[in-house]
Image 1: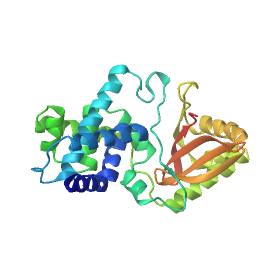
Image 2: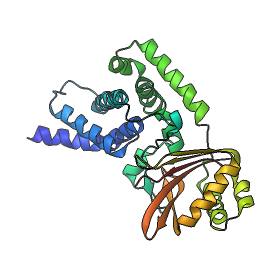
Image 3: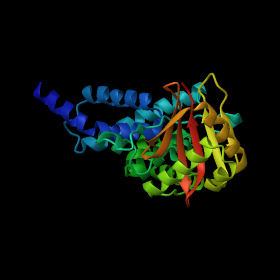
Length: 284
């Protein structure tokens, strides 16, 4: 019994990190929890007395479970890739108060894992995503990732390299100054509420992309260009009587309310003081 308690304590110590792996792999908080629980079940049924690094072992087990879940998801075709056939699927956001993020949430969204990056990860194949997430985000050696994929180390390295190029091309480095980003979001809200089209154009990048995910019952929307996005922002502001600044995956965002009911969550990608991406989740 004492050995089981010791093992459970070790697992709980690793749980936040495993949730972080699963969240990056799956983009779903609920599925990430399922993957972590499945990792615990695997641990409880396995003799790990010969395992020298339990954390690394658990990470690879969680990665394998997530890979199977992604492949199952792809085979059912229940989650089309973002912007494919006009559809938009946003990953689950991690929403916290401006006051700060608790330690577990901080681990979950560490390394600037914003919504924009999570969207790019959704476009990778399951194998590419595993290779990139485990190696580039969690420093798992390629020789440990290769057996999970049933590939050679060289092939796995190539997968990660291809994924890295796609991520760097589609999710360029954004501003990191939280205070400056908050000022930009404040300016966006002020202009939207006031119906100030010119002020919105000033805060939006000319090539801004706005994605809206309304879930299965509401058609998703993809808009491009400052003028189109500004017009939509003014229209949407009329429906949102109240909006609160929050942190969405660790960066300033907005939760909008109508009649005390949450209406949407907005995540902003900001570069050089302008909004280059606006991701809106309206799925009830």
